[in-house]
Image (cartoon, rainbow, N blue to C red; front, side, top):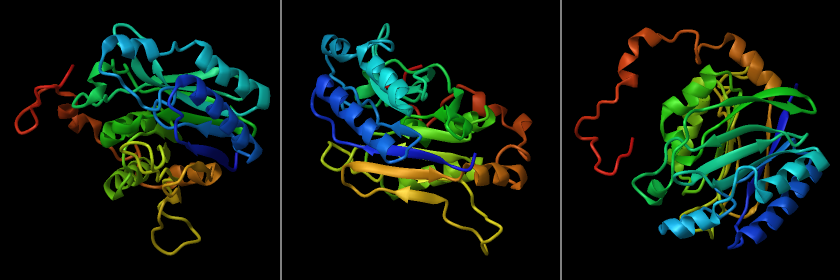
Amino acid sequence: MNSFKLAMLQLLPCGNIEDNLKKGLDYCKLAKDMGADMALFPEMWSTGYLIPQDSKKLSHIAVPLDGEFTAAFKNLAKEIGIAIGITILEKHEPHPRNTLCIFDRYGENILSYSKVHTCDFGEERMLDSGEDFYVADLDTEHGILKVGAMICYDREFPESARVLMLKGAEIIFVPNACPMEINRLSQLRARAYENMIGIATVNYPSGHPDCNGHSSAFDGITYKPSDEGSRDTLIIEAGEREGIYIADFPVKEIREYRKSEIHGNAYRRPEKYKILTSETINEPFIRSDRRK
């Protein structure tokens, strides 16, 4: 497998689920025409990252994991032979969840991931968080790729990407809905670097509240035999406008790089890290709105 082409769908939502569905399907078809192996949406595309603070309204706009909205993308994936990562406000008890579903080119749901690090300091306090991080085999035209997912705020915790790397992920997909500025882009660059992993983030464009585009992809390859010194791992960074941006991951090179370089897992000392699993929170990090 030489490469993997991801269409990052940096799109403006339409204001309602029905129109988001139609626009999403149309752009997946365009992504296929552009030669993409997979299309990925920004965070919670079904609602355009709308999270009503009224529990009845919130429940009303949530969609089932196996409902009509996701089924439309499942069927399209199978029909045109492209993997699709569709994001939804998932109907769930006792509260909805912020979820990514990945359908492969055969229409099989290979991964459903719900955001673990919900933004409990904001409107996501209305949502349930996910249970774990998952890795799945994505069957592409060119071979099998091991993929995982984080969603937006997950990227701010190095443990998220580390767990996915330890579980075997080669590329991490990151649906997003926030301003992507130098520090958040630096977080993603760091996650790719320290785990020798590909990372692709899809954001809403400028014009959507609190978003500014700048969807990005990093390949995690810091050194190449053909280069002198280190290199920037950035594959592509979109501007602020709406559009489809293709990230072409050099999978063969990533795999070769991971066989010999010093980052990742080889020289870790997990027996020294026991404090990382402690649930104790001390000042100055105590927050009254923190949920378990």
